[in-house]
Image 1: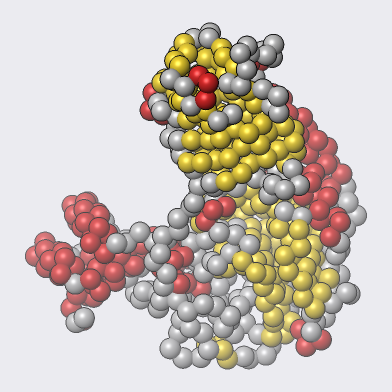
Image 2: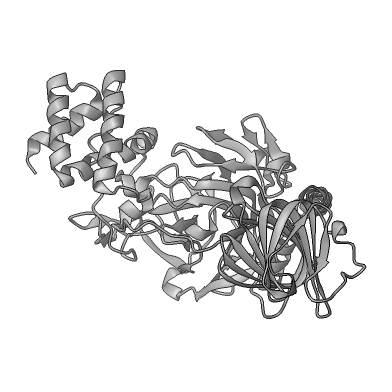
Amino acid sequence: MTAAPHELIDAALDGRISEADFARLQDAMLHDAELRLAYLRANNLHQAIREQAAFLSAASQSASDDNGSFLPTPALPPSATAIRWPVKLALATGLAFCIASLAYFAGWNASTSNRLTGNSTETLLSGHATLRRSLNINWTDQQSPFQDGQVLPQGKLQFAAGVAEIDFFCGASVVIEGPADLDIVSDWEVTLHTGRLRASVPPAARGFKVNAAETQIVDLGTEFAVVVSDRNADVQVIDGEIRIDGGQLDGTHLLTGQRRSLTHDQPTDSALESILTTKQLQLKYQDALASHWLRWQSATQSIAARDDLIAYYPITSCIQGRTVQNVGPTGSLNDGQIVGPVQVDDGRFPALSSALDFSSPGSRVRTRIDGEFSAFSFTCWVNINRLDNLYNALFMADGYENGEPHWQIRNDGSLMFSVMVDDTQEIKVNTRFEDKPVTDAGLHRVYFTKPVWNDSMRDRWIHLAAVYDLDGRKVSQYVNGELVGEETIPQKFVPQTLRIGGAELGNWGQPFRNSPWFAVRNLNGKIDDMLLLDSALDAQAIRALYQLGKPLGYE
């Protein structure tokens, strides 16, 4: 690739390209796949780099929590030279059209994180339905639990008690009361072995099938109910029409109000109409949600009164304008300040609670926490859209000086926790992103877990915790109350003390290297209930925090 096309890309992003050169660039991209990818990379990172520009001149003595040597091999990031903003509407329109066309030719459908790792394979989620909501579900010992909002794959679903509402991808919805044993067959079909089922089938899902007692119930535009037990199986049409295939009723059509037994001459006395409707389940769910929320609000008051509290930001009750109030004993001294396009969105208790969305690159909440500490226990709830950046911030000390922590998630879904040990040591490291060794922040060690997040977990709340036990010389990390990583702190990496200083939720304010892959660290997602403690919580205490704060429908 010659230098001239790169200069044209720079001019296009700057908004100073001539019409003739624009036509030349467009023609070149139509015939050069490498140039297409170069333009797309530059364009997609352009806004993120621009919003971070104010932070790229931070003092060189500030440091990172990593040196890049632990990372999978990524594609080399695009040049950071083209950081200017296009201002000509005509060119912007033309380039938007060009990008759309070129994306088709280039197959450009990977996320930002995939571009950084050189992996352009689109993630495919395997499943046929979604668990919309559940109430008082008691999963059987043989069944892996599902959470509300989770995709349901083909296969068995069993619960001993409770109610589940399932949306099939064809458009049909079913409410199932336990005890229930069923098999998800496809987008259009379910087999009910035991349980009480009510199906609502819109016109777009006409033809949806429920298999029961060696028969197949075929929807013809209807709402119907099916009850299957070890003694009998009945079906009733609540509204519309169904056809029964197989068994003793093969070929039978039933209309509104009609009811038949699939196994006997007469149906049982059980009232199929009593199976919960979607609306009835929603009302019960809202009542349970309110009760769950009140229980958590009571728990937050107890947390705020803890003697070991460093700072606590229960987002729902602590947002005042652009201030995120600390509800701990230090009060406003540790308040956070919203900076940039942070959005207030629904928290993990929909319509009752709030969370902060850091999806835009410039989003952050800044705070300052002075003092020295004997241990760290950090916990929060997160709802991740994507891991766009190589490193995605949860809570990051600004300068990364001696004793200061960094807590974040790598783009492969691994949790990371680190504390600076000696910021005076000059350490050179080889990264997979630079063509020569770079100066690291100082002596420190990053403690990684195995990958704990993937694309199938998008838009689901998860509870994260990191415990840095200085006296016990270990680092423990948790997801949803379960231990996912634990390491001993080697003597070489034991800091003399722990401190925080200036810090940020959801981003990093003072990166000491200006490479976009290194500097841009906003979390593309939401954070709720950030808790910082000056003690090392044990596994039981972490589990208790998860159980108290978990959303409705979680195990």
